[in-house]
Length: 153
Image (cartoon, rainbow, N blue to C red):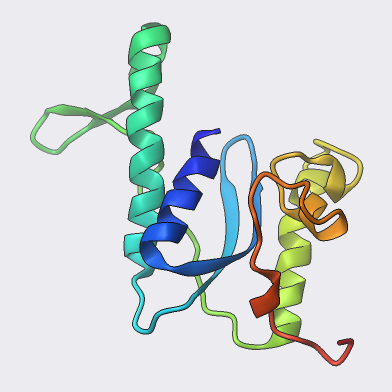
């Protein structure tokens, strides 16, 4: 899976902990904890998006060229570029309270259930929910040791 590989590349390059993820059919959610201060969220996202874009567009050009017009992005000067990701940086924010972090993890994991793609969060294979329930079974290694503790422990 291209996104999983790109996330690993970004994690190595930008030194962050991965707390949660969910890859949906048309978007993704990630919850990360940068280990370096300062850090560049735009740099992290660029690394993730650039790898996926290059691989996805090569794939489409080679194996599904008829789909290429769906990726067209007309530039103001009239030229055509091909874009995999939508314009914009997405929705990012800094979470500072442990309860907020855990609520965000629950929200991320429940996304495929809300969309009726599965019955339980652990049933969605492209999510970290399974890793929380059954350590070592997810697509990506999580850094659970750096998660903030709540009054629950």
